[in-house]
Image 1 (spheres, rainbow, N blue to C red):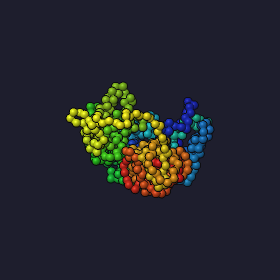
Image 2: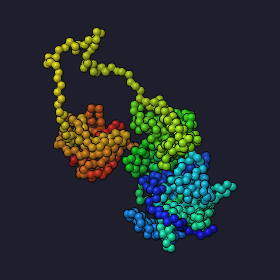
Image 3: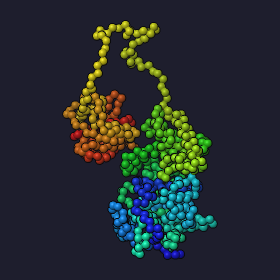
Length: 619
């Protein structure tokens, strides 16, 4: 075995790779959620047929002196720090200063992600194998299954987005062609171009392992630390261990966000008992715990308002997927066997999602976005044919969140378009069968008879014989007088909207700004100055509570009132409890800052499922 250590190859072309790596930047928006999706997808892609994939995610603290060849790694980081002067801004400089600081402490945090009941990353370390594709290739994805989740080779960058040293270790055990167990160990750093002490330009990408040609260390060698090695002395099995060095756990809810992302994206695989996940010994994700996870108050509280709405919608998909639904099946001429599960119930978001191999792909399917005239529902579409899934995978963009036939080769585009169009027609027909609102017959409304003339058999009415003693009616338009909404601390709300009133409903859509109205109702007490708020969102959450979000246009003490939207007037709803502000006489008093987003969890005295309005007034 040759010299082992950290090595960044010499760049003979005098190129320069800056700090902003495109692969890492792709996942920086939601790094924890993206990490969860990518690592689980990689494990599922390497699953052993007939086995349940097990994934363990564990945060550890290791002695920094156990990092192999630590001094060389620190020297590389120091060279990059010196090279950061060529970067605009302080971003690169601050990153490398912090990385050096972390790796000179007594201990450093690492996130260990290990899987079993998988084939591991098949080697050897040569072009064309999954191990080579993960460690060395760019833009290449080599999977053992043509219907595997990944297809662009971009997902491998997700772990680097949560490393404060942009360094990841990998140890994998696989069986070679003769059935012998082999272990490969290597690390990779994605830093930036830099010059070494001799003035040689070094590439941004560096490796730990055998320096000659940047090869992995084979077997359970002495220079492979215990925290890295996939294989132990008492247990030999195929699988992969990935260790994120200097894991960024600055978000106190990192465990909960990982859990939320996993169940959102892989509820299908978990429900079918194809996947088990343990997160830091705190959360066990399996078929029996899925619904508990979706109702977990701590996880719900860790999500922002957009994430919460998505999370609750995925729960509805799970309920439909697990059998509380109507099931339709078809043999599509392009995709093969496909299934659709439909659940109809009040308050559902009326959306259709698509799964592939147990992974959530999209709810923005072509021609399946709007459903006017339908009952509330959710539907889950899944193709169960391997050939069909291969075609669907080929249509997915790098984020695997849609189907785009334009990505197919020219000779397959027509197939892709036909498949999506045929499936849309079939799903529409199935939804008409179970979720279409029936057309109502013409009904006689007896309560209104006295206001309309009666036509006799000769088709004449008494109104034709009546004489208007005041002459003909002349219509003269009059300007509308707009009155200001007044709402006292104990007063009620009259019909019609006034300033400071914004809409909200179960679908999470909120109005913005203000709306004017006649407001003929009485409100008692002194009038209060209305406060404009925008981007109001409101939807039901578990335990009968409601999530309410808004942004105020001005700062100060405000009084929030909730109104149930009626057909001709709105009705006051008394708030029993709120997690922000103070509840006084059924309303919420709180201090707000202009432009700051507020999210409250409220419980009302009398629960209801309809739309609400929110009135904000100055205290």
